[in-house]
Length: 299
Image (tube, rainbow, N blue to C red; front, top):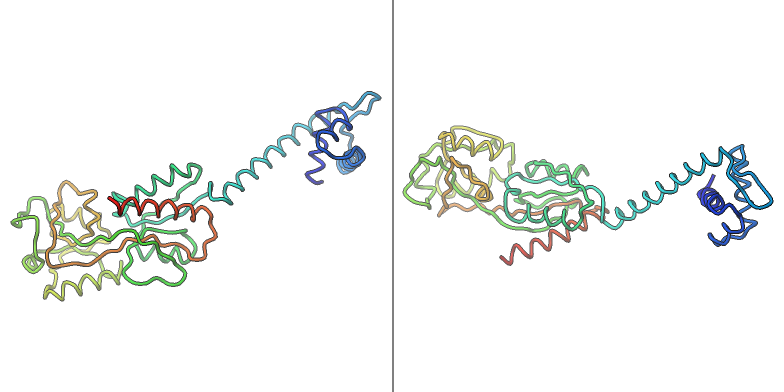
């Protein structure tokens, strides 16, 4: 059975005439008659009762017409959906993001703009650190992700540069260090909270090297795997921490942030994605993200 069998059958059923149906679908009467006969042979029962003045559906034909219309309707809907997916107007994107990048700035703005521009798209958002995202992008488990780039990625990934963050000092809100700016050398005696090296070895090594260049060895009293936990520990009064300036977008009530005068570790936020991706929806997302970057840089 082919789709044309169903189209011809529906046309004949609606017009109750092979002649009228052939005129409507622009197919010769013999061709319509032949396809209708072939369909009935395949089904093993008659769809129409033949009369001198036309055709009427048999009870089986009535039932088959209802289902045939539903099949054609479902097919048309599937075709429209597939076309929207093929042109990037529908589908699903699996994206990762470093949590602090989503609180303010270009990332939430780009996500909102994308949902407005492509309302039928579905975003699966996964909060992951940079190494986890890069691995999943390379393995094809994510279409892309917002990551901090401290070293070149493999040729399996492309990157779109977004913004650059840096370090700030986080301290308990009731600590008074004499101003809003400090030198790391002057506070080296404070207890510090950091994350374990295995969480992100490249960034950890750069941070410790920058501290070492100032002659400072941090007095680490506690380690935590995420900045959210680190800031919670800072807020509890356990110690200070060197954290991403992106946290200024959602400052905890129990934490104060101070500018560092002598310590800098640039944190380039980029969007990394599969270099060989064939997803039209990803290309739409990149367009929206590029436009958001232009608007953000023009602020």
